[in-house]
Amino acid sequence: MYDVLIVGAGPGGIFTAYELLEKRPDLRIAVFEMGNELKKRHCPIDGDKIKSCIHCKNCSIMSGFGGAGAFSDGKYNITNDFGGTLYEYIGKKSALELMEYVDKINLAFGGEGTKLYTTAGSSLKTSCMQNGLHLLDASVRHLGTDINYIVLENLYNAMKDHVDFYFDTPVQMACGENNAFTNNDYTDFYITLPKDNIETALWLESDRMEGLDITPEKLETEKRVVIEEFRQRYLNQPYGDQPMLLRALAYRVHPYRWATIGLSPDHIAGASLDEVRDFYRRFYHPSNAILSISADIPEERTIALCEKWFGPTADNPQSAASLPQEPSQTESRREEVERNVPATMIVLAYHIGSRTSPDFFLGDMTSDLLAGGESGRLYQHLVREQRLLGSVNAYVSGEVDPGLFVFTAQLLPSTTVEQAEAALLREIEILQTEKIDEYELEKIKNKFEANTLFGELNVMNKAMNLGFYEMLGDLPLINREVTIYRSQTAEQIADFSRRTFRPENCSTLIYKASK
Image (cartoon, rainbow, N blue to C red; front, side, top):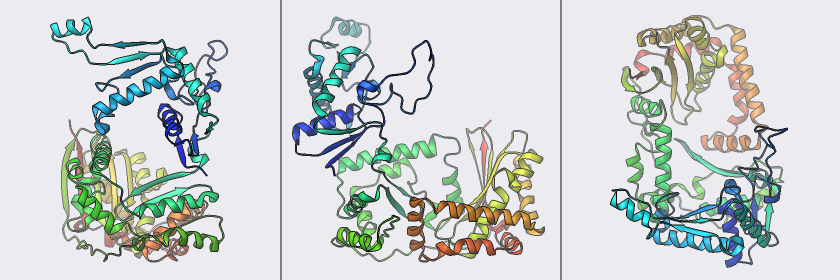
């Protein structure tokens, strides 16, 4: 067992390990690096037998002890004016002091005698000012490629007997994966790791519930991260805001009308520390959590470990929030927007039942019948045969409360919105009125069964599924779903289509490409 695990032996990992040794030599430290140790970092390109990249499993130029800059020209910039934003987190004075401290370490481990270049007080700076130019303030330590290598080598030799370095070892292979996601219904924290380290996972998850360690500074940092994620997901890519527009169109009452991440960057930026703490207290406590474990560990030991780590955890029971339910849609809705995108898109959304309702399973099968890859009806008829669309899809949202059955279609330049919409509605009409071929239906059922069985082979999938179905309030459903899919008939799918795909139950979004 280690006290500290460091992922990556680039400059950040190296100096973290160094500083810990200086301040806390009693700690047991391990560093995991996917690349090689310094002396084994050799690129096979020799200009003779090997003239170009052969795509090594781990690139010796880009990864290994010292990071991607190990074989650079060894220039270290000491400035806040370019090269990073560290000063935003610790202040400009502290940032410069830290850079100067690292520079002293580099000098102590082989960089002595190298030159420090600076713009301060230089004649060049005076000339720039006289000509209306601004010269950035910076000092640059030029170690050079050879000296940079020596510094790294000396640092490694100084630490190797006190720190355990694991090279050619991606962290997922060494100790697992720890991550989380949030959707419209729940937050999922998940960990995969060797079973011998299960206590590490239980300690980490129990610690999440012991108290929120967040300061105004940490909150502001996280806000910037989430705002950037919002921009990348919804604003900086084609069709990014389409899901948000569709939710706002299809839902008028239920919270599903909002994206999980927030309504806008301003919405995220406006979240206060008190609001975050209140949210944490209301939701992140034992009686509102489900612990799911998939492992080759005796049941008695598993229960004992869970009691050890979660038994002492303080609880904060809260009354379950009563969510407003979306009323039945009684008239068609339509919205048209114009965006700078490659092609116009049509989106049709129809309300369906909850995740545990019979209509969910019928909707799921219907979506696969219509859009199960290139063999699906929509692709065959509208893309391949009629050449009206560039792409087409159909899916169910899969949310806990009543969700949506969604059609999406990207138009070819020669296709009008009216033509595409009429073609989609014609395919719906065929589904409602013409008998579904039994072979076609059996193929879909086989696919569902195979996907379910193969998915259960993965311990992560099994654990997540167990937790999800427990949250639904029907854990045995996990073992009944294949039978449910198998029992669906062509008549039931046609009936579902007639009940669901009605004009008054439809929200249509026309996402037009600007000319």
